[in-house]
Length: 95
Image (cartoon, rainbow, N blue to C red):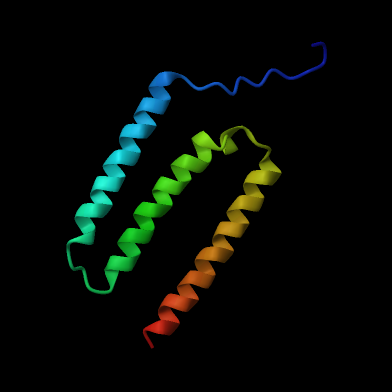
């Protein structure tokens, strides 16, 4: 155990319960928004909600919170590229 870094990766039950409640609220919110008509913004709202939900799962359940800075930057760059591709496809589709 000498020379090793102690990474406490165990989260409390309260964190998991709060995350579960937040995911349920976001799911209910997306279901409620699915029945409403916002025109061209429907896709934007649904993708925003699903992005928030996936971010929460990524950070807490997949333990990205405890990864190195390089890995986090890699994920951010990949996400930016994905958003750029989705934007090009969505805006190109409406032209």
